[in-house]
Image (cartoon, rainbow, N blue to C red; front, side, top):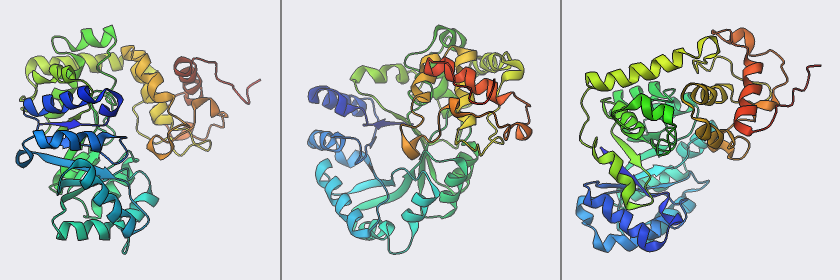
Length: 360
């Protein structure tokens, strides 16, 4: 039920990176995932490969959609050489985050032609995609029927993509969860409030159990950089049945904390979009929910400060771009004072007062 995600191992000494790979396999993790864009990750996996039981492993790498089939073919061959393997068991088009990238991925004569040719030659087994896209783009990608799996964001603290999870399951696709420990709330560094609410489980374990209890979810990707980072997950590694009564009580407590936000709670319905200033209002207010209800301020800062710095991987402008035009207000079913909440969130997570542009 767990995958080892090798994104972070280029950030540690090589011997530590190799120990982390070996520890994953020792624990029985047979799916190892990397990407062309993860620095030296493919090469590190290639150095480990002669010492691993290759026939027992599923190897995934991810390559972004390319403009041409020739470029994709070159990248596939490079990844095979780097990883020291003759076959990519599961290949993902990496980062189908916009309608334009989806079109590039599936158009005739484009990069998918090279992927299908590599499949015919036995260089690639299965084909999926990874995505940080808005929900509708993910659903559109699923409906192309070009893919066998989807790698996406979905966690207890971010349930927006459940319709895509459910649809992928209906289509008999694999559902891989991106970085539940980090993107799911930096659960490796929880606030004391969150730690108390999830006891006797840790926040990492509670989120993992919530995900593993859902039959639609195939695997959780653990982005470890050190061997000991797997330890906290081991206790729930084989627990994929329905939530126990004790576990359900944890999520009842978490829901009660959400309710304490009262009339300032955003339900993240996305009805407020589009914003004329390009603000990703639902994501800003989701981060506010977490900071206010669970003291997850550091996680909020980490994500909030990606706005305007991460392109299509995390789109949206900062909340202090709000001009208080009021365009979003009639669409909000909760009747939230969205401009006020945006400026409050900016001050909380950016550490500076919002510049209210039109108010005297």
